[in-house]
Picture 1 (cartoon, rainbow, N blue to C red):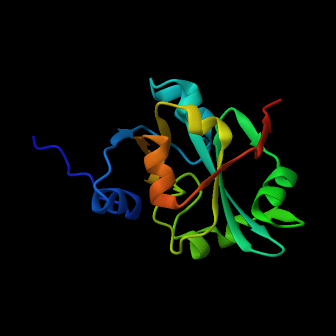
Picture 2: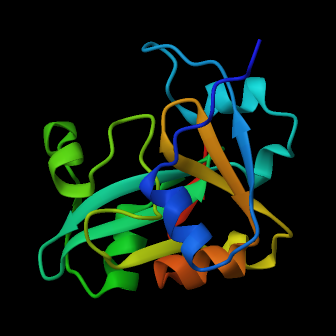
Length: 164
């Protein structure tokens, strides 16, 4: 029996267009387990390589995208400072798809509807590889953090606090 061909997402199309080397990881998912922990359980890659994408809105800049290790939490004050905002808040989940083109559990920092200001945890800068959502649930993309920075025009900054 022939294996079903993987449907390319906007994220995959964009890294292909930029001729960036990457590796895809498929994993089983369910509606109740969409967080980084579910990805940790199924992928064999080092836990610290797996990042989550958080979409926020700033009082001065509007939409701001943040990517932090799955084992940490976003520090909204640090993100506000890094992005030139006084205040920043999480984007309501009901606005996620309309704003980014992606749904919860499948939100990639790559290939959103617009190129929003994007910030990666400073930790990513020193890593060999990084894994983020490839734009749909159950699919992650692994690539060099500097390539990811190039494709998203991201800035590395201190934007996280350790996970409690």
